[in-house]
Length: 61
Image (tube, rainbow, N blue to C red; front, side, top):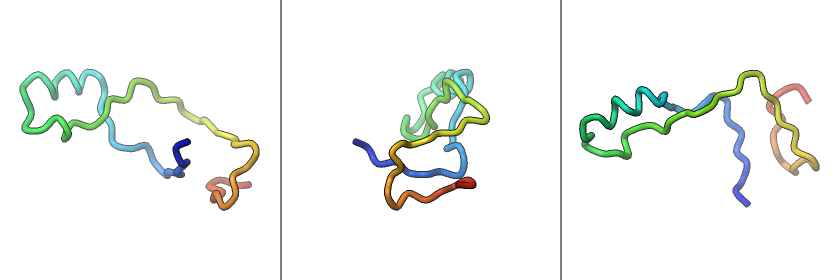
C-alpha cells in the first residue's frame, strides 16, 4: 500500500485545453509538462478509520 502524505495545497497541474496546447508542438521534454487535472472537488474532507498512528492532524481534530 502506498504511504499517505499530507499536502497543504494542490500540486501543479494544467487543464485539458492547456495540455492540448502544450503537446501541439513537440516540447523539449514531455517530462516538463505538468499532469492534467481531470476533476477537482472543492470543500472535501477525508476520514481515515481506523486512524493511522503518527499521522499529523492537519485540521481541528
